[in-house]
Amino acid sequence: MSLLGFGAAPIGNLYHPLTDAQANSAVQSALDSGIRYFDTAPHYGFGLSETRLGAALAKTAVTEPVIVSTKVGRLLVPSTSKASMRHGFADAPPLEPQFDYSYDGVMRSFDASLKRLQRTHVDVLLAHDLGPLTHGADHPARFREFMEGGYRAMSELKAAGQVTAIGLGTNEWQICEAALKHGDFDGFLLAGRYTLLEQGACETFLPLCARRGASVILGGPFNSGILATGVKGADIASGKIPLHYNYEAAPQAIIDRVAQIESVCEEFAVPLAAAALQFPAAHPQICSVLAGLASEAQVQQSLVWMNTPIPEELWQRLRECELLHPAAPIPA
Image (tube, rainbow, N blue to C red; front, side, top):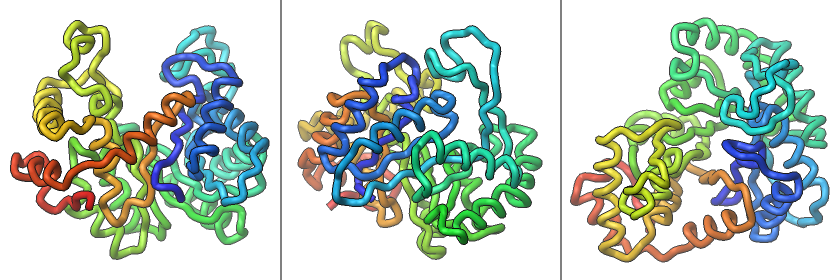
């Protein structure tokens, strides 16, 4: 699995539409640059991301293995909505995502994903968006539905060789800890919860993964954008570039903390985005860092950030300023 992974939500028309050609160009640029891990989901563009990724990968002739992860937990059902933007996706197919963590729901979702991806096997299969953040008061029932049904389906798919590894894809490390108390999982895709901005996952969750032999893919390294844009630019101050954190407008406390981190990066002439992309990869349990990519330019910029030299003194300064958790490993 490549250290930098390709998050394929943007090629599902996340926030704005892309053409098939633009999506294909982004995937091809990633392949040409050595990226070999691609993450998608039925939810991303209501099948559009999987379809475009499958079509692009079907054209490749790379010799190294390409690793693909997708997700279960939602079924796509017909929609009559005429809205151009739904659930954050623009001009998507006339389908609506419907939560279903049951045995049959997971099996149906997986079969549909194989067709869209033009594959007979998926390397990593993840149960998508379990947890109270998504389901609120319905979380206990959804979690029970998954452990009694969907988890069994995923285990059978793994035993049959149709899936290599199973896990959860979520924004909450707490639900991953809970899942490990009830089942065996190979790993997790954790979005936004172990970043340059927040490292609470290193207290109990990541050590538990080490004890259980579970790897972690880190999604959302920019915390929905604020660690990519920073908070100090003129366009930001004027409001031309909005500040997003955790999929919403950033609160002032987050803005202030990012400003402190950004000041340290400026002191060492290091782009904030480079530090944000490299920091999570220093933890031994994290096997890949996913960046959402929509174009060749974004692929190349992410590679530059991932390979930007960063002096150890920068990380030490962040720790001295109490901007990093004491238990968080720093890049060598």
